[in-house]
Image (cartoon, rainbow, N blue to C red):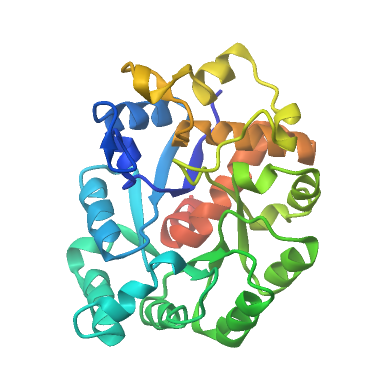
Length: 307
């Protein structure tokens, strides 16, 4: 039986999924094929991350006609300058974000605040706590080499949001403990499993706090990664989670594109983690799925538990 999975971090608005790489068109739009492979791999929900207002609009356009798609709204740290460049300044940018959230048409589609967090800047992260407090939505968080600033800001604002997920986690055991003690969830992908140290930390994530993602088109598992030796697949799993891939210059419909990660590969993350945890993949997949429901679809989970 193919386990059901939720990709809680996928950048489907990236131009690569339309055949465009760094401003150059290399092949036809194959997003429909990407989604077909995703469904075939057991991925029945996708959380499309939006790192600015434009991406949020694009993500909502994608999600409106697809019952399996849901979106976030936020400003990625790398896009933080948009707050200041926006006509009317940061307050006007925040108001525009609120307009998306308050639009009844978006109510069932926007399920998290983010992607937001820290990388090399501190400004504007705090504005997202206002959105989370206003809506009650969980926070989709980004942390990269922030020297403790991220944890400090989260700690200071923890009472302003109910749930939060640190996505694409690549931190230390000490950071993991801090985030777990703060009641946060941890989402892992191929980038979370690159080194032996990454694997040791990943194996320490409590099961009731674990989620999985691809962060496509980035963060694939590669042969050079420490996780690769743990990737043991049957022929059926290979067909679902690692279909044939070709270079973008030799694109063929029905094949993946080399170097472009996509949702169907989430099964690879699952299989590596099942090896690290010493668990049946189906059991682990269901635990991650229930965790994802608890954070992003709590009402649905509550209804299912009544049955």
